[in-house]
Length: 132
Image (cartoon, rainbow, N blue to C red; front, side):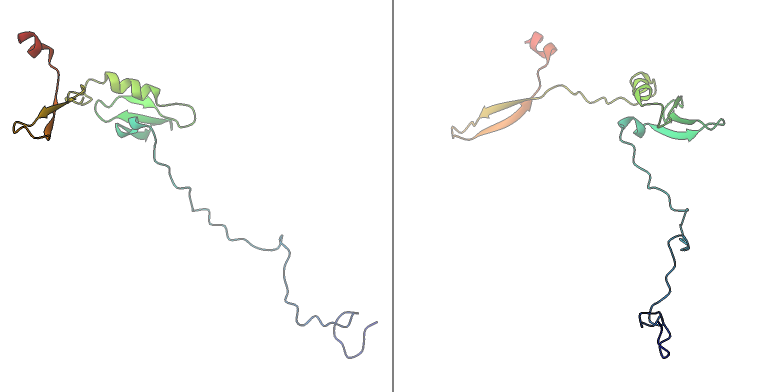
């Protein structure tokens, strides 16, 4: 039973203080579809020597920076094995000319007779050893 002086429901509360809220199906959500996922940096070292491109058929490819040879580079179906193999045999790939042999540490006693000495490096040379 509603009272004569109340404008609300049967319980006596008025509807004037309750704000209108819509159901979740009525709410418009402004979704920005222009946001894209951040691109991930390639992990394989071979990508330092290859450039990605898309060929005329739409396939993802990678081109050697030195000899321009192309390899398949689809992230879902191709790996980097063919590119790593190519780098070992690429005729234009700049090889390091630094000798990567092991250096040895040599301790030379001081010429003054004190307990201090000098640490130096030396490298074994087979040709020099044969001459001696």
